[in-house]
Length: 125
Image (cartoon, rainbow, N blue to C red):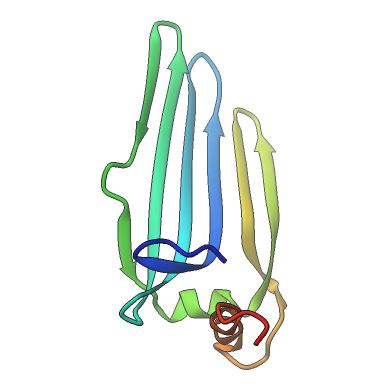
């Protein structure tokens, strides 16, 4: 777990979508599930888009990352095994890393996964 100036990151996920043809478009979203110094639980989404093609070069990071309070669905995501997902379909490639697989439940009781992530912040004490 990384400690940031304003929060602790409990988990991260990466979502990447790439379309190709005459113009190549890549969209990447980094999603961080965080504990704030005030005890709040929130989700931080940072994005990047890149477009490449004949005479076109465009690259932009989201200047204002989106944040929202962690909801019930976010809490439940911690209760599932995470893994890698990749799909190539024609001119589109989707690649997701550390994404929960809702077919592989780790904990039967809702919220135990998040409790374990919070406990891991304390280390092996």
